[in-house]
Image 1 (cartoon, helix red, strand yellow):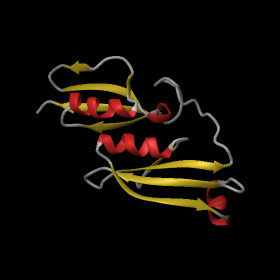
Image 2: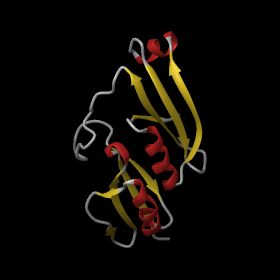
Image 3: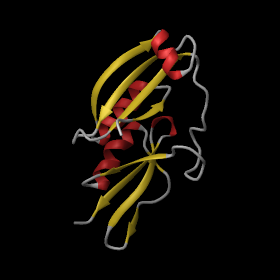
Image 4: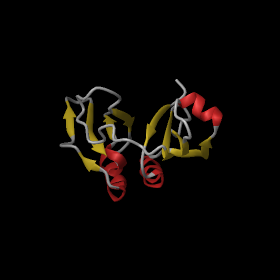
Length: 140
């Protein structure tokens, strides 16, 4: 897998949120023109993208903010059981510290931080655009 793509309306806030989570900005670009239209299937598209990678350089998320055509709401507040891509999961070293770092960036705890036996602590948070992020801290 090369990357997962997500469309957002506030690219700067999204980048800041995922940087606070520990991801690194790999690059930004403006995308438009015949080539892009041919790939994405939209005429006259114009977008800014940010490619972010995990610190180990294994995984990437591409965030796109479209200027044209206007983005449509794909159910940004959809619950976890709605069809489609619903969440991205990250393993963190310290769940409480991660939650504290994400809070100033608008992270909302979906419900509780739960502990599964003596294996892990986990929770879901909503970030910018309602993106669901699962955080997992494994006990070692």
